[in-house]
Image 1 (cartoon, protein in one colour):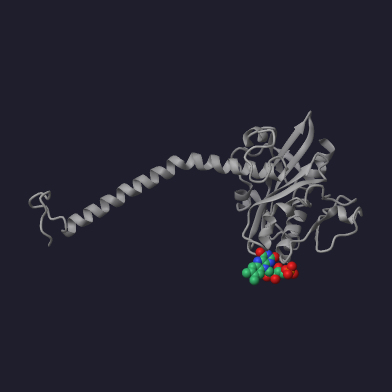
Image 2 (cartoon, rainbow, N blue to C red):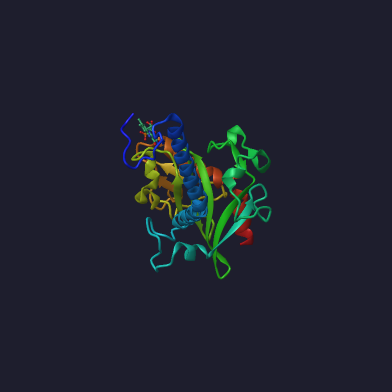
Length: 273
Ligand SMILES: Cc1cc2nc3c(=O)[nH]c(=O)nc-3n(C[C@H](O)[C@H](O)[C@H](O)COP(=O)(O)O)c2cc1C
């Protein structure tokens, strides 16, 4: 027992087991209340930041926001640029717009895990290694004077270490790629992680996503076809030393531009505008 200091109340045993436990539990309770209150109070801010982050990813894929910038060249904020987009839900089976979900609250990734809101992808068609695909997804459309300027679709697929999540953007012809960007992946920095390299991403705008028969046609190649050839219009350089990530990216683009992805929707939109 230590010597009681002048401040100790007479008869209060501060090292007694009961008192030590009482103080420890009281400290734990206060801390847990502080941490949980902070988590609850910060939840709306966190959600807002996540929403802003997704808007940035969509705008970057569309080439409307420079890498690492928070405003465009004219000083417009992310919210200002994004406000020019309409967000619509699309039934991937029919390829038509649908009002079946509330777009402000709908999460296609969550839906893909719910059997009633998704389909099992047949093994021989599951080139992006997804397992299931949501019945309804979201698209982001920017129009000028009623004509489509940009269309952005969410895409995902397996690389080497995990599923890459991103956005693929098209120009108004719905055939020419405006950009591709991933906001989540587990690929190795310097190898598959080069999907984030601005120099590689700069190779995507202008690539033609479909061949003359309307079939998905993007190829990631080690050696480019002669410049100006039909084949070269569909080609993007492979990632050096990362054949498996490269194959994953090619497959996910093929899947989401194909029949089980947004293929039917793109066909319809080209006709209806
Ligand atoms: C530690 C480590 C990390 C790797 N990360 C990747 C990766 O992220 N993406 C990828 O395609 N290959 C990665 N590889 C290489 C693959 O194992 C494989 O060798 C490569 O995809 C073959 O590509 P290449 O034919 O272009 O050399 C990694 C290898 C090692 C040892």
